[in-house]
Image (tube, rainbow, N blue to C red; front, side, top):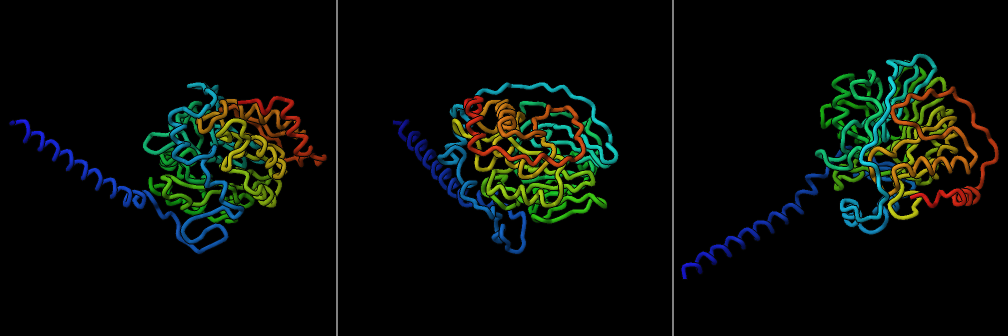
Length: 395
């Protein structure tokens, strides 16, 4: 009989714990989203800002969908469990690194791909760094996709950085830990688009945020212009599109630098808008994280090699380097599918000058030369060529 009171106390305790857990869950549902949400920017309404959140003026329906279809919860569950049919990746890729110069004077230009969307561009005595990330993971609190390929330049071997371009606030592009180290060491000018300065400022780092079309003068003849792209922003899901995404044009006497950041195709007219600022000597264009279901050749927020080649053509660039592949595993395609598909695409379309670089290998960029204006192959002919070359069979 003595066990009956004990059983009652146990059940009462369990019910109390269940009630407490239910109340806490309800509070979390009410409070946590607001806590994780942030207002990164306040300003006037525009064609791409509704007073609360930013948007793509060429339409947002595509970037609102979960990659590969279904709900975002289903997507992340498939991704985290590996139950998505993705092609295997190597666990680690070693890199052969070559020393980089302290400075590159005059109109000479050298570009070194560090990995992902991080590129060191040296010209006119300036050291320019795009979306720098040296962290081992791309996510909050040390979580997220792990770096597969080590950085092409050890951070301690990085020359003094003068200018940093930050395209948007996703963890694989805005890495607070790296920015904090750069700021402490070099105090570079950091240029970004509206709202991202608030995220950067969370770690005590100063930056200059501008709207699309905004211009920051670096020195006479060298400006940074914020240009349009087709993407979205978020650090916590609930703060979606509180900050603006962008690409960049850096005007230079010997021909401009274009950095696409991270983008889907959208209307593709943003490439022509960037080209209107002057001839582009070097374009840094993403080609990876484009496949979230079998046979996919683009995602709505990431261009693949086919769209990247079209953007390269629209830019009228004389040289292009493929980035945003082979560093963090963000999608389903195999490790080397993006550069292999790009090589086939370039061959089928008859263009030249757009290639995948090797991480850690400085590349000398020739002076700007206008691309040949021969009649471009039709899209139907290119697709037919890609199929015959096995491009659509690549995993």
